[in-house]
Image (cartoon, rainbow, N blue to C red):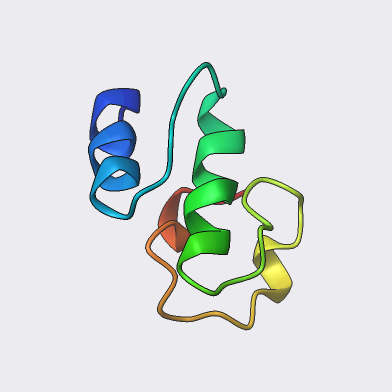
Length: 59
């Protein structure tokens, strides 16, 4: 997903994208959605959040 798509999702959820980097913005959206803010932290292989929007892009 590109940064503009992520910013649009963030805006829909009321998250201010400001000058956040991609990973930080995704984590802010995750937190707003009630998930752990874990995107890109290396825990993707042990992820217990099957419905997370970012799961496919997570490393």
